[in-house]
Length: 211
Figure 1 (cartoon, rainbow, N blue to C red):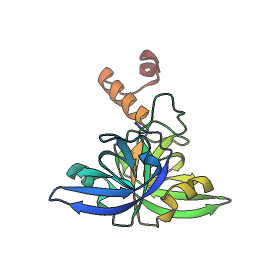
Figure 2: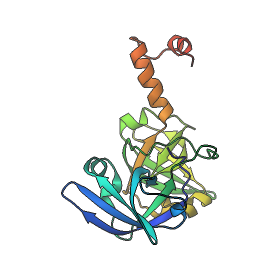
Figure 3: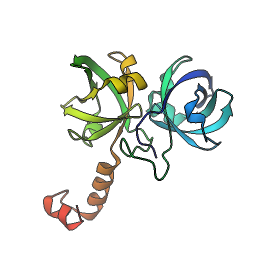
């Protein structure tokens, strides 16, 4: 489990591709502290397991399913990636609960300046938009962000200078792909209520099951 607060920007140093998998070596420093083999590190929002600890980084294996469902397949040597170690009990939850399991991929529609911030519009699949609410949380390439607006094609988020400096999002261009993970709470509530009710989610059913 992660918080969506990026600790460090890493750099892809090598990519070894197999028939249905890949091994990535990532240059990093901060996320190596206390990291052991088998630990999880969010890499552009994807939960990956450390398989080797290097002098100046670490390696991870990426399976075919992950390659097919995320932007990991488009990484190249020299690509920069957002990194975050798994959260520890007792840590401050500065972002929101992020699992590192990507729901789908979105496409950057536009970027525009808004005072000191940058407004980023992202086209997203309908099934992703269904789990989003304005002022709710969304993880984009592992970054915990607040949804500003939602329309039929996608949604927008506002990037402040701190996020711009400490993540890779504003290094991207219009047309680039990003990993999207919706807030877990909405998905669990829908799953629970779809099993408990035949008429769908209503005000009465929410009250009945304690919401």
